[in-house]
Image 1 (cartoon, helix red, strand yellow):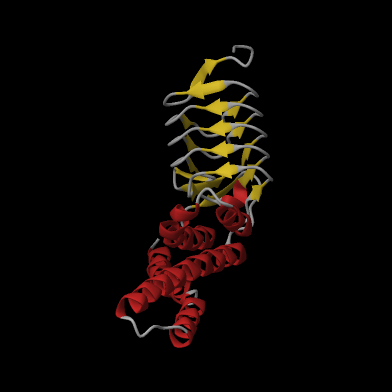
Image 2 (cartoon, one colour):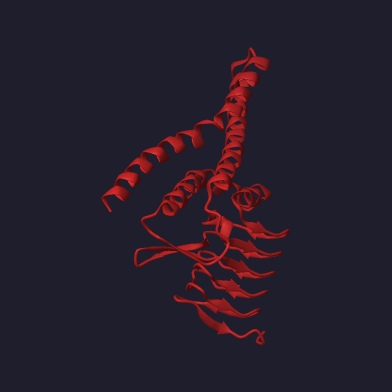
Length: 237
């Protein structure tokens, strides 16, 4: 116990250093662009110079955001725990620390990512992190945790603010379980999807519903509530 607490403390310090890298290194392309633009362009007129400076700064910020997303995704791809099936580990383990580091990298990216959902940029980020996202999926939320455990098929729509968790903690154990959202399904605004959930093709999860762990939602059905229950059969219109 004490040994793990020491490791956890050291890990926290390491995470602070990683955050400096995650936020700092992607700034290099933005800084180079800003220097180049400032040297190449300018105007003797104060107002025109102010306008150009503003455009340069905003462009620099966008370059930084894109660099941050790419670098963060790459780090998570390299560091994430290679798990693709139901797995249980001790909470006090190196696997937990490794998972927590990736989670922190993801959280440091969210303030930027929230401005880029839905878009191909956000989808690309989640794919780099390990998610299996098929063509046509519309992801309006930046709260897709444990992306390496997610399979999102064609034409799925994830509503704004929806939270999808591929992990949970129970009785001193960290549990991972894949989530499958089949073709054409809809996850409503603010809904929460827990580990091991299987949402069938064309099924609908109502806004702010909470789907408990390991729940299987049959194709075409509508579920809602806390915890989510069937509110409309697939045969009903």
